Image: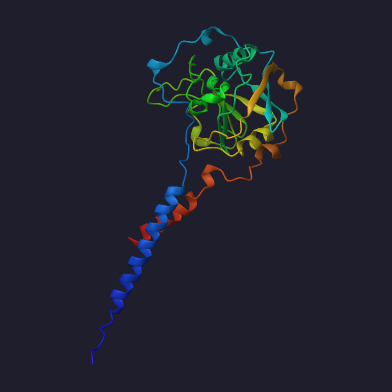
Length: 275
C-alpha cells in the first residue's frame, strides 16, 4: 500500500500566493488593454516649426475690437440649430482675441466640423481640413498657418475657451495655433500655465456638454459630423450668463478619466503589497 505525500502547509500557502499573483497579473494586463490614454495636454498635430506655413496676415498687427467682446456660434446638433456664446477676454489675450475676431469676420469657421470630443474634458474644433468630410483621418493636424504668441494668463475652469498648439518639443515657447480652439468641460488644472485661455462660454454650455457625449473613434473624433453653421461677433452684455448649476453639471457618460483606471490602480497597489 502506497502512501500519498501531501504538500506542507508552507508549500500550500506559497501555491495559493502564486495563483493569486498570476490571476492578478492576467487581470491587470486585461484592464491595461482596455484603458484609453488619458490626454493631459491638447495637441493639434506633430508638425515641426519648419513645416508651419506662413499666414495670409500677421496676427501681431491686429487689434482686438473691444466693442464686440462676444463670439456667437451656431452648431448643427442632431438637426437642431444650437447657439453657444463665448465672452472674449482682450485684456488677458489681446493678440489671440484679435486673431479670433478676424477669423470670424472672414467667415473662416463657418462649415468647419468639431473633430475632438471627450466627456468631462474638452471639445475641440477649428481645423480647416474638417471642412472636407473625405479628409476626416487628417482632422486635427492643421490650422497652424498663423502661430500666435503665448498669452497664458487665465486658468482652465468649466467653459474656459483656449487655443490649441503644437507640443513642447516642436514649440517650446508654447505659441498657439492660429485657428484651432477648445472648450474645457471641467476644472483642468493640469493644463494651467500651458495654454492661452482667451474666452469663457456664457451661454449654451449644455450644448457643448451634449456634443462631448457623442460616440467617437480612437482619435476622439465623433462619428456623426457636427458642424459650425455660423459664427459672428456681438456684445457679451446682451447675453444672459449660464446658471452656475449648468456649468457644474457633469455628463452622464463616463469620461476617459473615469474608465477602468481606478481598477488598474487597485491591482497595482495589490501587486505592490504582495511583493
